[in-house]
Length: 216
Image 1: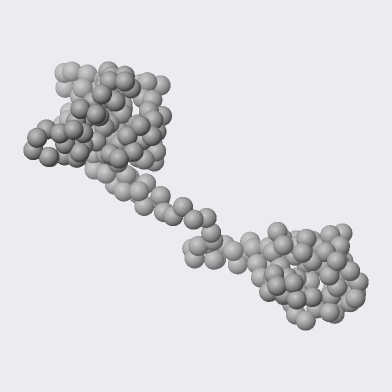
Image 2 (image 1 turned 180 degrees about the vertical axis):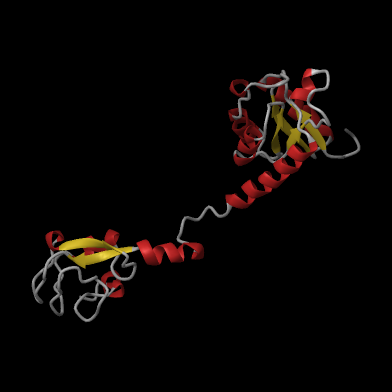
């Protein structure tokens, strides 16, 4: 521990109290370490994996990486651990799962290891941004399926609008959005509007800018 090299600490067969003591002891000598959620059974059944411990480790030890040491069959549980925030993954590798010993059955063959790395990178790429907004790749779908407010019936000029005369049309992504439709209530059209006329065709409809700035 005194060399400062990265340490990987598995938590198999241990309690949370024990792992807290391990954390405190190791940190005094080497701050460069991680703790892995692990259940020591070979092969490991899904109901005994307890991936939720990863979240508990993240809360208890926020200043170190938390990871996952897996002994289950297949790849999906390890991928789920990555999706939950595991920063380090440990899996055993074998050249032949039929070899003697339970550890071989719970291990990955080289092709599976390569697939695990590939799919982990895919999951990492999928994390993306935490900001929810429409992004450029959605533009084509927006053009086809976007919606805006329309006249449900013929609306003469100078008559205050109500929700009874307004509707929503698919395939009209430009104009007053459905979620802003209530802002049209009480307003009056500058010119009349025919049925299904989108609230995006001046001069009869107010513009989105006018609605936002209340320039009526």
